Length: 487
Image 1 (cartoon, one colour):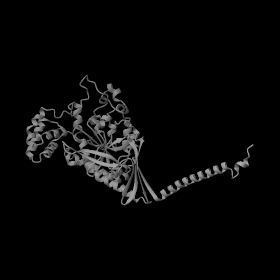
Image 2 (image 1 turned 90 degrees about the vertical axis):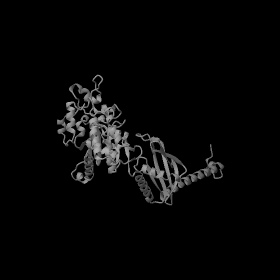
Image 3 (image 1 turned 45 degrees about the vertical axis):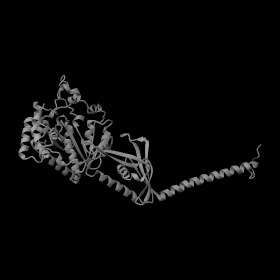
Image 4 (image 1 turned 60 degrees about the vertical axis):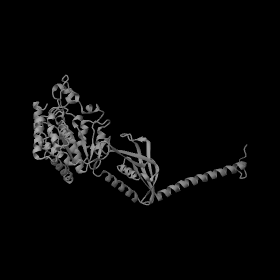
């Protein structure tokens, strides 16, 4: 048998050595644990930390603020932007920015550790960009220094964007800036027919100043506009100029975006950047009328809206769009502009009041527009020359878009004499081949595409039944369509 007393006696070398090692190990573990606890307590008492993730709206501001201080660290990344100075030259702007990792900054005499952390394993599902965060750590307990940094970052961003219009595009439920900020377009640079610009601008201003009025009466505070007319008439240009006048940005919503669903559409429209208007261009291409031109085309003309969109990758349904425009999922304080070349191709449900509150025809160049654009190009021309140009142009081109007219004047920009002398060439050149009204039948075989089959011209009687008052030009256009003169 083993003598247990001999094993546990103090002069037993095995027992003494093992006990000593156990005591030392326990003491070391206690010191390590206690040290970590002490360090953590000191860190919480002495240091203060701010964490900003790439999902937060302030993240791009802080990045821009760090870009401006890229020379304060030796671990750098490069940010290169190319700007076209002239038609034959470009300028390159190179900024050194803090790369991923740790950086030591001195801000207003106070040192702080800045960590730019990038997780390559975690990607934004919408953009594919790696998830990032920026972490500021400094000594003290006050957060005032962080407030100062965020304020500076915001002010820097505003200075960079001053006099510019930002374009955003949807990335699923989020919005991302598209390209570089664009110089604001002056309102006077877009020449619409007499009174149209003032009428639209006045209506927008009235809505912007009526928030309390809407609230007091329980009316949803949002406004929808539909600009229709032939291509090249200035619809998108006017919206760009209007955004600049209002100091607003533009959020372009592409309903055909792959992977866009009703839920993501609702989230995107409820998360619009501040001071931004929403633009849905060529709305007729995404949602043509659900009614057919004849009973024989009933099957194809009643094609579900989501089927038409699924063909190009989107899962947005027509009912989903209507719901986010004025249904339960619709957001407040929202300004929406839609454009279309073919208003008669739209489903009446899309343009009823509450979804579209103001409808405006932006048509081909009128005599007023022709004269104003001519004077814009040639300020030295007297009224006789201006009137003569407009008269001669009408003889050669009874209808012409503003885009085509501007293109012609650009080719004769040196003097008004050249513009007058070359005007007869308009009858020989294919200056403006854009049809004023679409021929819905294919010339080859008389067949129709599924999308065009779904389009049907609204009658004058149907327009008259709508709650809003049609703007000038509706009845004449629709009557021409009905009689076949517009084709």
